[in-house]
Length: 184
Image 1 (cartoon, rainbow, N blue to C red):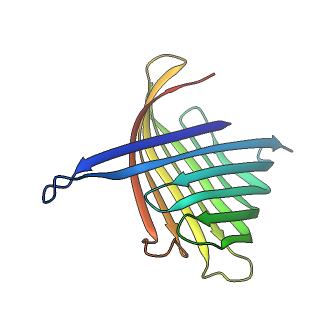
Image 2: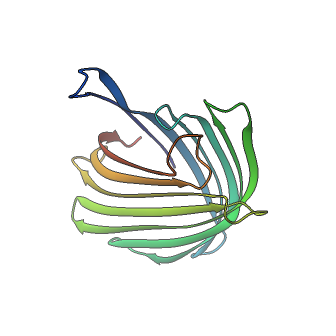
């Protein structure tokens, strides 16, 4: 599977009248699953992210591991995963970059609410192997409405927490996203 998201937004400061960038980010993700049995699988995944507002020049994560498909049906799917990941971060306002080996623990869930409407939720936690207090966590929850077999609309909230953010930036970042998609 592969996906990408992009958002850019500006708003006017009511006190100064100055236009301020409030969103300027993008991310791309890819994942390959190989099932060894009906329930157990191995995976290889990667993601690349940039966020100008959070001063994130780039975050690159490459992971490998195994998973288990607990529920698989037309109406609902639930799987858990565990593996290792290489996490690299470079911030615009810092000269040093951060590169570490992390565990990768997460789950994926989706539930069909109606014939063409689905709720999706995923969470992935990347604690550094040498220091569990240094971690990155990302979670997405959303509703997807299929208009045709190929075209869909999605409304989602993306929650990111970085225990070691850029200097002067907060650890928590919540994004809301409304977009149109196309399945190849």
